[in-house]
Amino acid sequence: VKRITVNSILEMKSTGEKISVLTAYDYTMASILDAAGVDIILVGDSAANVMAGYETTLPITLDQMIYHAASVSRAVRRALLVVDLPFGTYQGNPYDALNAAIRVMKETGAHALKLEGGVEIKQSIELIINAGIPVMGHLGLMPQSVNAYGGYGLRATGVREAHKLNSDAQLLHELGCFSVVLEKIPAKLAKEVTEHLRIPTIGIGAGIDTDGQVLVIHDLLGMNKNFKPKFVRQYLNLHELMEGAVQHFVSDVKSKNFPDEKEQY
Ligand code: KIV
Ligand code: NA
Image (cartoon, rainbow, N blue to C red; front, side, top):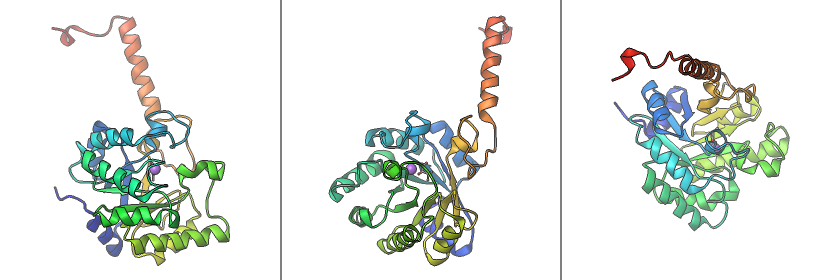
């Protein structure tokens, strides 16, 4: 199979082919997503939420991200593998950010990294790109900044924040980012940014006009009963299917229906 590269992703913007992106955090899930033909597999720091049960993405560590990313990497044959740098590794000293970036690249087999923010993290992005590491930007709702926002509401509804988002997107392009995630912003703004930007935009809760779409795999599969914001499309109700299967197993054990004669030695 022909591998997806950052160049293939850039090309998709010019040919108008939409870019499909999903998260994965482990080997088995990643092998399914890769075989199904998703263009980019993102080892998101949303692992903090869906894997570890934290309320925010802030607690996940660099070592934990590396564990998830290395597991995913062993499964990926075709997709471009992008890994989130976790909170605290790139907001301070840019050389610390570069060291964290290099660790992820050396220890996981990632093809690119994703960082949240614009002008505030300019130097970190510059150093990482200068080291030959492709960077995906992330603007709009940046979950690592949840404490500054006071919640996970829609971003860039006002003129000032919309203007800053536009100029940050332009800056990310100038710094050499190969794409940018736009999270939870008005569809109209996402369309405008996408039209003015030469690098592809990947939307989540950002409407139909971005160059690609990303979802957290657990949300797409309907694994979490209590999380269904309107930007999520649930393609399965896996929570219900899995609960049913487990209930079936429990009752088979209780009723001595499992194992049967063919399931023993
Ligand atoms: O961590 C994550 O899952 C993400 C995507 C939702 C863009 O950053
Ligand atoms: Na993330």
